[in-house]
Image (cartoon, rainbow, N blue to C red; front, side):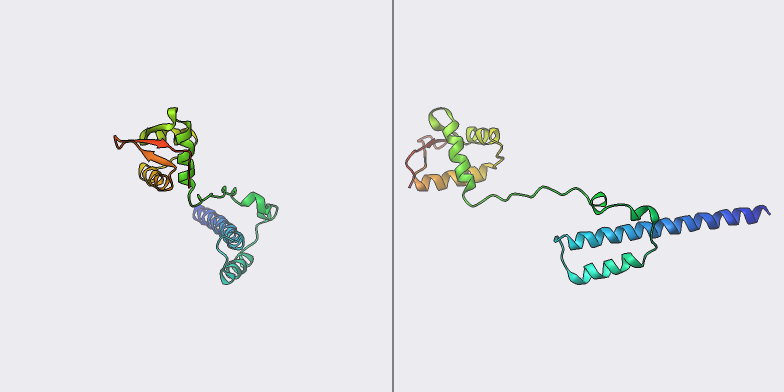
Length: 153
């Protein structure tokens, strides 16, 4: 008698586990289908296959009431890629903020950081070289100090 009660309890636990697995699998397939149709990874065959699998899974009465917005993760902000020449423009602005419009690369980097631009030293040096070629910046005799030149070509 005690053995049949334990067996019955194990059967009930197994049934609950299987139902939970099916519900979780169906929710995962719905999430994959929503992700694939959101335009991020658009392939028609993947979207159709996952949609077919998610409809064949056992439906959950609690999951039916959830809306699409509740199950979807919050959207990530769009990454803004810098345009060509942005570093040189930012460096020019930084040079203008320095006292006497002159300073070493470290001072330029600090001024850029104050404006919210984290540009590595190599990119600053490259941008200064571009500005020097255009006549927008000049290198002092010590080889370390850069000056802003108002006349650009």
